[in-house]
Image (cartoon, rainbow, N blue to C red; front, top):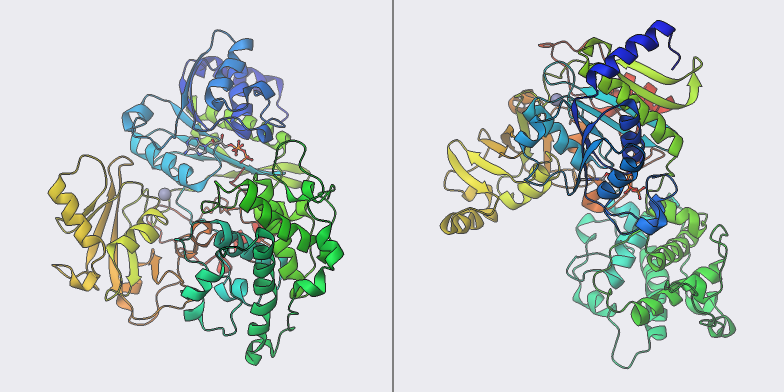
Length: 632
Ligand SMILES: Nc1ncnc2c1ncn2[C@@H]1O[C@H](COP(=O)(O)OP(=O)(O)OP(=O)(O)O)[C@@H](O)[C@H]1O
Ligand SMILES: [Zn+2]
């Protein structure tokens, strides 16, 4: 960022003017550590810092304010202490807490001149966006993914808010791709992590289906077969090893044999090969198990089998050995966790199990296998963070904050940090867009909720739409002036009972039936958020494209059509990763959320259609060359 002498001088004047301002930083991770350092070195003296996390070993390579001795301690508090060592006069208030906590209410936000985000998830970002809108405080938002980064500025009423542009949430894979017809290793990894690991060691209450279906009938996609549930229990008198072998033969052998019986499925596809243990392992191979044990206390099948190189692609035989050994270790060494396991990229044994299971399935389906290192990256959606990108982004955040605080808002830019220079530039400043008049967060635009009112319940709408898609934490739902739902602790008992009774009632059975034409109001008092949902009945939904059985769009015009809804808003319509735990389809990076660069066309009052991501030319161009990430 070259600057002329006079530019430097005037920048310095602004710095002197603004450093007494009080700023709020949210997130003390990769960007946050860089940001806190840059803020104090720029001269800022009054900083509040919120982070809910504690320091992990894996943070130390780039979160340079933290040392090994800090592992396990609060990020916010340690970051504060580290910075005070080289700038003792600065006032830093560290909050080891979730920014969504009630204590950080609108009045809390109002005390700041600007809010600076260094977060890593959509949920928290959306919440801070709403709090800033409610408090009327400008927000500088940021994110990095590897070499890519972005900084955006949001001023209520002047520029887009963080939610003005729909963010295509990560798509899920069709159920049948995962359960029956994988064609990429990621499909097998999703299967291994969401179905195999969950079925064997996760919460048994969560229904999952381990069978490779012999039919593509989606009704069968989730098995409720009690025999199947029983099959995956250890039988009395059965050794852990025999159990593991039985599971192996079932999920890689018998299920594939069953699937092959459905000829239709394989007409245009390569037929998978069933894998049975007696063909994969000789007795001798089996006997060589369990010779060594882990040396650092971590329970690990690799250590146990003396497989040292995480970058090496295991043979089918080794994958089978890891699969069996990881099951044995879960049952014998991690028995306390069995029944509660949810995939975690930092759980070595889970990573090994998932790698082996995914590779074995991949081998069956003729898909190339991968090393545990690669599989871990895919399973954990890991994109290796680059400290320099975080430092650049932190610098840009401070520059934008300086412009905001010195009332030079017309100079504010959203800036993309790209991987390869474009016109010799690595930093691409783009003018900020005006607020989207159709944004349901910063304008009053109504939304259309299509669902089958004969089967839909309030519980489903709250989970699938209000919480997941609208990002509302404590919803209050009303039909006209009638309260239908409220969340919170200080609700009277009779009201709690009343709301509970309504939760699972079908919408058509409500005292005043909820059907086409009814408007539901959703509010969150803490976020000062309010929006209207115009209900529209539809009998059927496409199970592949609309797996939730409800569709939320921002287009009121669809109320007047009888059959098809308007093009759905991508971010609202796409099932989230949290829903199915499935990673994004195709080559796109699931952590990358596209933001449209400053479309000058969108002026207040201009109708701006919430376009389908496929038909968005600007977004497409960016997607190819300058992906704009928000996750760190
Ligand atoms: N709701 C929230 N409230 C407070 N802090 C949050 C919230 N959500 C995320 N954060 C913080 O934002 C920071 C984001 O930092 P970063 O992306 O570097 O993640 P990390 O957890 O440190 O690293 P990694 O995810 O790569 O292991 C984290 O320290 C995290 O605790
Ligand atoms: Zn908005």
